[in-house]
Length: 253
Image (cartoon, rainbow, N blue to C red; front, side, top):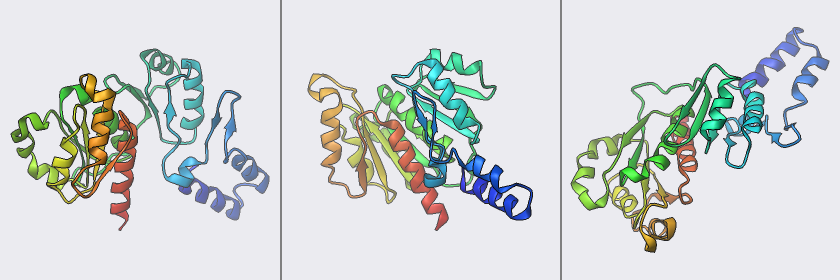
């Protein structure tokens, strides 16, 4: 339930269009809805501004669809991350408005509310093409939460002139997500060029001494550029969510 839905329910009670007993019944599932295998947090959008997101890895397609059905019944959009093709095929049997983004393995049920075209975007920047699955997870998450996204891909430090060709876009962004593996230096470079907050995402891309993303993670944590924060290895979802919250907070000021 969202704040707007709760206000509407209370107005209906005050106006006599809804009985107190019926209102109590609707509010009964606010804390969570127990499905046996999952406790769906139906109250989350009221607390945080966005519904619970389904992490699909480790869940069966049937479990994912049932959780999604409960969330979708109350909200205009449902987001599911690390989603398999099998789960998407199962969801298509229950929902008409479902989309699957194959590269980041994200499923979106419903129609996200798009930001105005003239609004300042979240920029998603990658060092290389191999970082695209994580970058697209961040981009689709931010878009689903209502942010406008601009993608700037394959501009890593091995050819720094590629990044500098996008300086105007970078300086226009409200927040910047930088996705990089190998040594992870791109986040520091971007952080030194812009005034917007930078969300750095280390990826597990790289040869043996990159230690499946640990090298990039440590580089980003040790960034000499101010204004850089770091999420976990391959956590595009966390970066996209955080950037969308930053943009939402800036709009309210």
